[in-house]
Image 1 (spheres, rainbow, N blue to C red):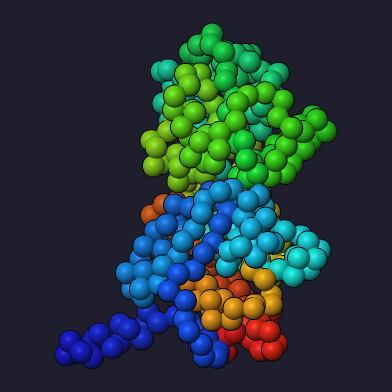
Image 2 (cartoon, one colour):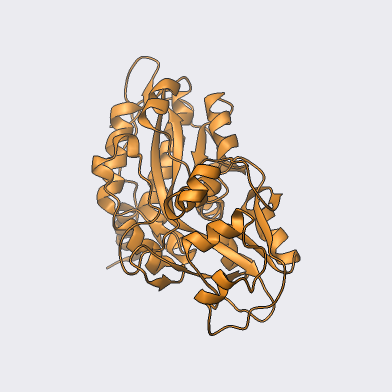
Length: 350
């Protein structure tokens, strides 16, 4: 096979799956803001996409709450949130949402003599720590789960998010399922009234605090734990097994998602069944307006995520995110075609 023919075949094989309707000046920069949970993979995708197309994706990692506010105010081309909006909220805001990848929120600790994966926790005990009821690492409840570890008589410093955060939503949604006391006293949301601890801004801020404060515990998206070489814990899942975070346990939880039956792609993946499931898993979502005043820029946004689905799976897996299966990608492409339109009512994709 000659080199030109080989290049042509490769080009066809890696071409994006959709064609995009209409003409107009293509944007050279697209802007988004929101969740810090997917920032590591969005940064990787943006770098690869710019190298291939010349189009820059500028993403502000400001937290899901900020992303929802900015897309609602139309100050960015897309918003990002780890807390899916209900179909009612989407309709009210004239928005659509779609998932990009699935990952995991992981407790991280700074505890002398206890390495990564050594400490075991369950949901009820983790909730009690964040309620401020368990204040020492050698508390009987923690010790009962860790009979093979010598736990220090050391105060626990709780670290949580200070900003509106989808990572917090996933974390508190799980705690609400694991602990009736947590559900009644605190509940779930992107921002909650914490009973204990200190706040850090973004996954980056929480990671930084935990790294600096001895005896601390926090929660971050798994990629941040990997990048910062942080010590994670094992969690007891719904089936009663202790599992470690990673692509295998995130995939096990993701296997329970039923995207076809989820109105507006509203799907929450915490406390899923399965012997290998990581209990604090979740998808991360993109928010876009259904009616697009700047159709050319909106097409560039869709081209970027279409490219990411078709070509970004390996990069996602390298960061221990779970890429969406092809059938789900095609559901999303159909939703783009059916829902996102220009001011004349024409679809932006063919």
